[in-house]
Image 1 (cartoon, rainbow, N blue to C red):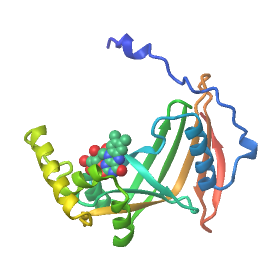
Image 2: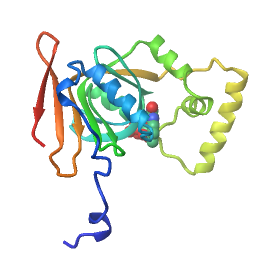
Image 3: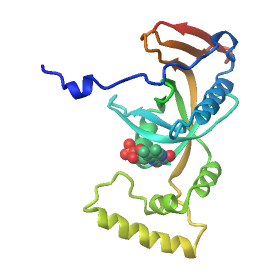
Image 4: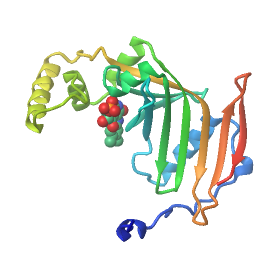
Length: 218
Ligand SMILES: Cc1cc2nc3c(=O)[nH]c(=O)nc-3n(C[C@H](O)[C@H](O)[C@H](O)COP(=O)(O)O)c2cc1C
């Protein structure tokens, strides 16, 4: 096989120079997540709240897509919202486990989370829906996400029509909109290094629901 030099010669790990004091790092992954997030915001990481969500169906067929994290609570549960009837929602009802990955390339950092997923109640889901921008609400209200589309124009027309409906009835909600909670059993904080001796700290939940912390090899 001939490699594509354009790809293999691209630079990587540009942000790997960041100083970290692993010894004084928090034992609480939720606190550590917020410390890393604040640092990412300070360093102007683009869209640090965007993460890749991987799910699988009952056959073990895996899909992934980018979503926004909506909240991380004190137990280090991660919340995201999407439709419960799109492929993501369907996969989660077949197999309620997921993996999340934040990759902050400006810092060569990733945070990888995996665990069980639960639906939040309807009220919390609707609160989340109402927090969305008008354009986001309009496309969600069309309720066609991931369905085949015969042309981009059709989507524009449908969303325009929905935007007008939303203007005259701002309380409209999509009842399938769902806030999901990932209850992690594992959270990894990864700092990339140019030497490839990446520094990786893994939290795993023990039987008494506390977190154990260990480094793993790069
Ligand atoms: C930066 C970014 C943020 C996104 N945030 C969301 C989100 O919070 N919820 C959502 O349903 N889709 C979001 N999407 C769209 C998803 O990537 C995806 O297209 C959609 O959820 C349908 O995925 P599915 O067909 O695998 O179910 C986002 C896309 C990008 C690029």
